[in-house]
Each structure stands twice: as C-alpha cells, then as structure tokens.
Image 1: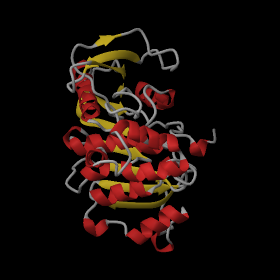
Image 2: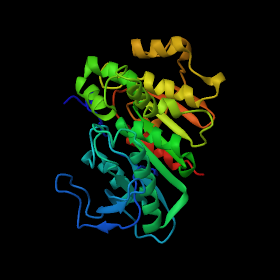
Image 3: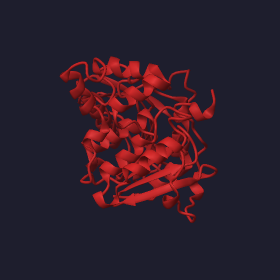
Image 4: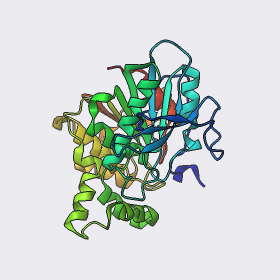
Length: 333
C-alpha cells in the first residue's frame, strides 16, 4: 500500500520525550507472559488486564514500566480507527523503553465498528481507568501524563480530553476525525467501508432518525471542544490528506477553531482553500516557518491560540513521531 494512503503510517522516533495516553485500566488486573504473536512487541512490554469502571469488565492493554525509582512520565497510546494492539504503535514502546517512560496501550473496545466503541462512554471510562491502572502499578509523574493518537486515535484523544481535560499534561493529535456526520459523507465517496463502520456504530446514517442524529452529535469531538479546555493540544494534519488519504484536513482546522479564542480562528475562506487546493493561501505563508523535528515533512502552516496549536505539514494521512514526541516532551502541568 502506498504510504500516503496508509491509515497510520509510522515514522522513526528520535531521542525526545513524550507520553502517549489513552486506555482504561483499573483493579482486578492480571498479567500474561507476552503480547499476542501477531504483534512482535519487545519482551519488556506485558499484556495485562484491568477492570474498567465503565462496566466492571476486564479490559486488555499492553503495559510497560521502567526500572527507575524516579517518577516517570506516562505515555497513553491510542490505536487507530480499525485497530486494537498494533505493530504500527511499536515506536511508542521503543521510545518509552529507551527513555524510561511508562507506557499503556489500551484496546478501548477495539475497532470502531460497533456501538461499544467509537467515542462511547465505555471508551472514555476505559481510557481513564487505564491511567488509574498505570498510576497504581508504576511510579507515574502526575504532572507528565501524555495522550497521543493518530487518525481514529486522534479522534478518540480529542473525545477523552474534552470529557476529562484535568488528567492530561498535553495531547498530541494527528490527522483526527472530528465530525462523524461529515466523515460519513466524505467516506461514502472515497472509502465506503468507513461509512459502513459508522453506521454499525451509531445505528444508521445521518438523517435516519432523531436518535441516530443525536448519536452522531454526541460522539463527534467537534461537539465537545471549546476554548475552556485547559489541556495543551497540538493538532497536526498532512496537507494532502483526503486527496491522498482518508480524512480531509477541515476536521483538524475546525477542531482548532473550536478550541481557539474567536479572534484567532481560521477564516472559512482560508479553510476552503487549504482543503480544496491542498495549498496554503499566499497571505498565510510564513517564509520563516521551520521545525527540524518534522524532518522532510516540514510545516507549511502553523497557528497558535492559547494552549492549542495547529500545524499543517507536507504529507498525508500520517503521524511524524519525532515531532509528536518532541512537542510532548516540553509540556508539563
């Protein structure tokens, strides 16, 4: 598969610090010898179960804690739309092992193709319970609990931060879906299987009933994002996504607007130009914009408002691990 159209194309991570967070992990935990054979995780990463506060059921996760006695950052890593445990997430484990970070990689009800998943209350509680598990079973620095996710993981990260922003020191969000109704119609044209997943999760297509429409609203991050959210959030999208990928960048741009001070919002005409042309309008080009952490995928447009930042970079539907981890490593409560 062409890397530009891969749902979660991963790049090597550098020597920076980050905590990737999203999993629900609590009491009644048990550990097994290793993760599943299909995912060649390092032997230091353990498959565990914890009890979710959502329904008091055991939920699976991958967990790593360093040998250090010092309080360590916690990285909660989220899987993508169609994933659960993923070899695509291996760079997170490698980073945590190298840098003495705690890692939790939750399943949070698996792929987003059934009602218990897809931004549900169960998902939110699964992830918050995972944080509790990590804090109980490792020496976690409460001021350095980080959340990271791409694509469906970015979608879930925004849902979790909006619901409980006080937990996180920061969230790094990449190529997220933020409006399920808009993504349903977009996916019908470019990748219908994702539209089918949404229907399976929410009980129908937009407009089928008032109940279905309410589900689309309640399970879309855009409904819950506001400038009052205190968590630093870094939103990133590749400018060719939607054209060479699965999620048009208006999802990211509108999420920024929802989180930003009204005076800092990106104008509708500029959003339309960015999305339709896959280019930055001339009046928004910053000739001095550069960020070495993005490597060859250099930022093309960047804007900050309070604690939210958006970067549109040269790329598609992907995460630049080095950039995500560098930014997170600089965030503290």
